[in-house]
Length: 445
Image (cartoon, rainbow, N blue to C red):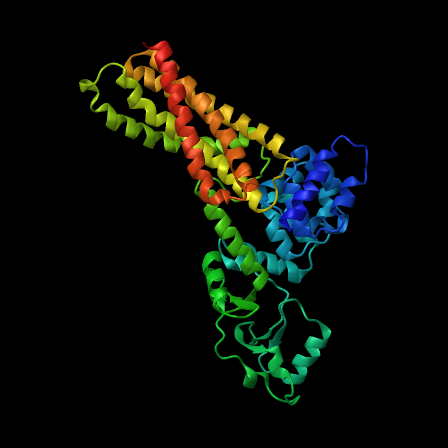
């Protein structure tokens, strides 16, 4: 799948200047909604808007649901009132839950008003749970029967409809409380009048709606079924957690761990605006700056026994550390893109420009902060100037390395997730020290 997406990206970006109104439609016509979502996220924003215009109308809602929150929001911001009205014309509760945080409040209210009473009730129940609770994302397409039903009732229901992941029928009492589960294959060969209670799967345990997504996914791993029932605090059956949802949650969990290691969010758009990306990463850089100055302070305790030039040695960890954290943020984003097949020779240039812009902006910002601190600390404007210039250069080099190192490693058939950070750290350390000490020898000696 990732290779196919990469090829489609190359087709779209390389033909950016071609006059072919049907190109985007041709490229995306054989893709499923999740593949189309990944394709859209992989395009620079201008190309993304053009490609979106060619997405079939009947697939647009499904594609938006599959997209990351930030990339989805970038498209929805450009929707006019007519486009939004068309989008919400026939939403079910589960879809609206997914899209609600990206839609204006009044649009969500209109969508709710257009739902039938059953779907509106589903939405209101789901919306009361936190974003990290499984009750918020339950699937309502499940087969439910009263507890006193018989085999003939179950067979009749199965003939009428069979949603995906229908391994069990769910039994409820008169008040809608969960009463048990019956495997569909247990119905075969049974007399029509037999009560379903006698075929109940006694080892089946429902999930509480307040269970965290991570815990719910782990419970699913050991359940060996295609769906688990989800109940509220009163044991009322709300819906089910399906195998598809469990796999999605596990994927998101491990992706979030990867992104969090560099202070990033798994919902971050590959082509997010420079200012927004810069603000997010600036916070992490600021936190890292505190630890870097702590290391410098520890070295500075011995300043009285050293010569004047040792002031440079005191500040060297700051230069190396700032370059290292800036590079690791870019590296993490690129490794994720490579793993998903979002990055190719076709979109590497705009991505590199974007990362260099983020690096340049953060470099100048933190160079000013560090320069003033260093100049005040050592009562030397020269030292402040030297470290400011070194910070700008090293963060820019870190951004360049963060993009190019994993790309080159992948071409050499080396896993960038394993060795990319080691190479990146080496590059930023060497460049940082050489630039810093080189400038110091020019301006301070």
